[in-house]
Length: 306
Image 1 (tube, rainbow, N blue to C red):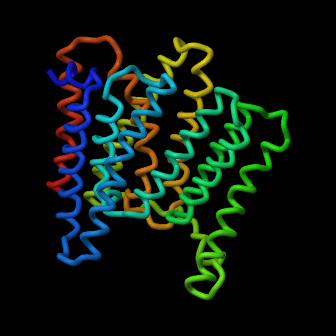
Image 2: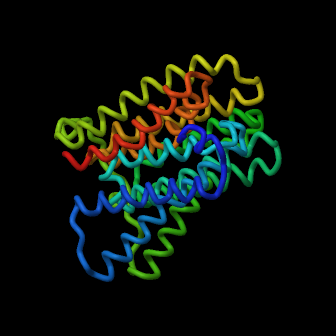
């Protein structure tokens, strides 16, 4: 049974989920249109790696910080949620930016051990800066770094300055790179992206399906998560709040994105996969859980109909 299979953490679980993700990745590229060119193939291979490999990073973060049990429900939900956003799978900028944000999250959550706090804050800020180079509005996740300061060592004023130093370092190095290779400075206007409050594109048939499914998952998983939150230990509650903040910021980033084609919603996938795992780890009828998992696995295939 699938529920029993994904409740374990074995190499075969990761292989199955990776193959499932690669299948949907190929479907996304098929719908977009495939070109037999070296550049296109290279970008496709890199995009596939940027899509699949963060699954392992997410699983490590979730289990290392006791956000989930030792199963593979989290990566299953990550695969499902990502697969209903086919436009994101063909957007290498979004995929790369998401990897940097994940690396930043890893450093922020490690602040709980109270060691090398300044180094971790600086590293997280660097990763957020790099994420913003590939997708500008991911710079909004710098809020997570400040929340990390508030959680770890708020009375040390130097910690509040570190995120600005990290972002400045990325900007300076970027200028050095463009000056060296393009004989010009890194333009602020080229770096900054406008804000859009138009959601008309979400009414297009294929995008409406993705947004609808994702919205239902957010509402349902969040209700379960908040109910279960009261039963969590005092030690883990600050980290759980950080994940909720991550989801809210991701929704904010998607809300102000200049071009809305559902690819910007990819940032929601990571925190929602962690939050949704709480539901699958609940003790309820095995048959009901089995049906839920089958629904999660099969829904992304309906994107072929749109």
